[in-house]
Image 1 (cartoon, rainbow, N blue to C red):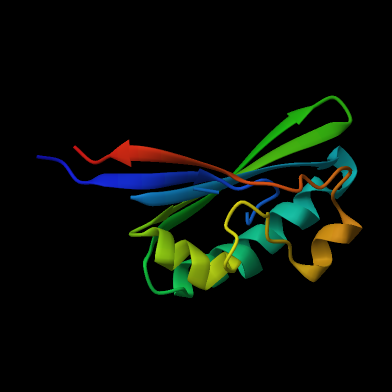
Image 2 (image 1 turned 90 degrees about the vertical axis):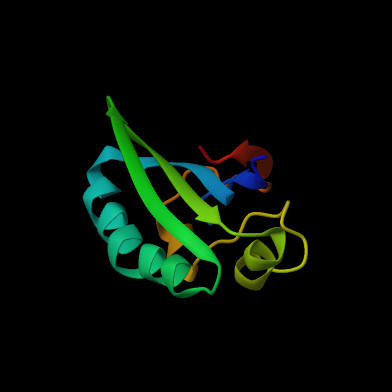
Length: 117
């Protein structure tokens, strides 16, 4: 029998969401390289250094003058997500630099159950 794992779609990056997690974010295309680099050098290492994190991925799609980002992370338990994001895992976690990039930060994250092979 497979063990259920939570998949979290973290609304702005931090957040999303195996306990996986994800976040949807938008910034201007002009700022997207800098933001993508911060996700690679700050956010992903932060996620991956949290006990119980099983992986973190930053995805980017540029559409005209807007860059769409999706942060997807995987966790071994809801408690591991709480250790990273705080007690209320339905609230998106943001870094201080996000306010300089995001056009409309999403306030909430969504969680899903998934099954490993």
